[in-house]
Image 1: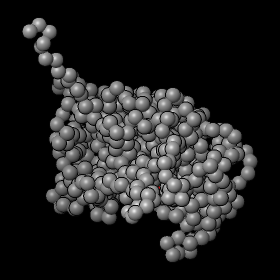
Image 2: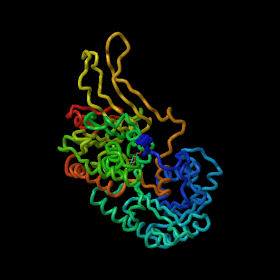
Image 3: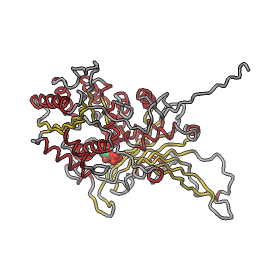
Length: 521
Ligand code: BG6
């Protein structure tokens, strides 16, 4: 019959790409050069992650790891350093055959960053690896070094023709060159613009991979799955239903040993500018039209462009500095007595701010962001707190303990999601009390999650930039934060809070003024 032809709608799941997801993507032949290879990050995160990738079969046979540092190591000495780091910090079990193969591609180049001869040697080493190990002219340069060292290293890479490929393979394809940089990406908007220009002078933006390791965490990527693979949450993910959002990153550790990096930087620059604003962007953004890196970035840029501090800042922000106290049964010193810190330091170790996202979806919904060191315990979570039910047809005395519904994304350490809602207490009355419904990664999945750096290093080698903030995101994040940083620099000092507590009283007051309170995670 005319017109009766069946039409079928082809529905395409945006979270699924064309390949079979069960077949892992393996990087092509390449090398990774690490500058600052003797530092903590390299030892605790980068080297172990590279081994874990090799152990999972995700590195190609033609892979090489090149360390560059001042120390006078032979290749074997450096390999021994890598081996120690792997044994101490790798996530996956040690397998001799995996290590033996990886170790064959380990090289060391000794030199300082201003040493021309050392960079000539690096170029030579990479050329030889292309021949001996088949790394194919593909090289990633990981700058695990202080930003004031960037200019000299970038210039050296450029002068020694390492930043841009000069050859093609037999199929006429150019090999790739990429640079990986770690935060801090500047210390305010102006310095970030300057730094970005400097990096882009040598490496075009599409070859720059800025690490925000929070984006490499499984639970952070799961925000996208939660929001866009389900029908359940989107209808209530807006100002009609959401009262406010709390994004918390609390740490119990202090700052002993980190004065060089942290003094003068503080909690807002260290964590809010990058990790927490990225979490906000993923929580608040609109659905991207696909999961192509460009589309994801577009949505994050849109939401960051619409985000701003709520005024007046003296009422909507708080900062603190830990003083001596008790943590885990141990007496710990305050920041001013930590080794290396200026005894007059005004650096904040706790920061809380209020943001609003000026879009139709989020109009009037405050986003509270807080982070701190030496707090009650280590926890990172995003709590979407819903408005109260418009009417409660119960005897008020029976609902006294009823809070607001909440959906809590537990980023770490107890990874999962909690839904909090009211439930009838068993018995003959109609008493309603809050209960939690939990999804826990540990129980739902048998496989343990890869470390953030495994995912991010693999993506660098594959050339997939979805999980790396671009220039525009970094600059927008500074634009959001700059006014409060300027204000804090201009007057006052951080409010003290004893180590082991949940921050200064001023942070509690900041929320109390709006009739709300911080969750005790
Ligand atoms: C880093 C900050 O980016 O993140 C540190 O510079 C902080 O100050 C660290 O301790 C926390 O990372 P994670 O993955 O342990 O939450």
